[in-house]
Length: 106
Image (cartoon, rainbow, N blue to C red; front, side, top):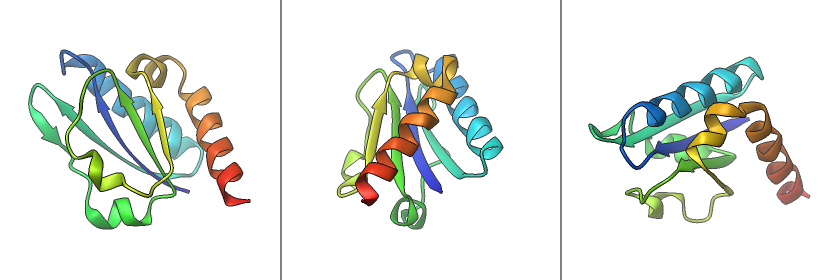
């Protein structure tokens, strides 16, 4: 499965990057292609390419604040969660991803 996402926390420092790392690590362990953009105190980093968004099966928004560029995901399946959930419970996040993709594929 191809998964893209954005992580952002209110202060835009540690949790933004911890969530990105957790989602990428767990996704790779499960055999998925994962690209996660961060939006934090340094601005937008690892910005998602149009082709990554176009080809994605789902978009994960692990955010605790407003983020830029949400219009890029129009028409895509979206899972919105708190940043803390991505960090503490990446297994649960991927269970939710699989449920959404399977449900909407029927």
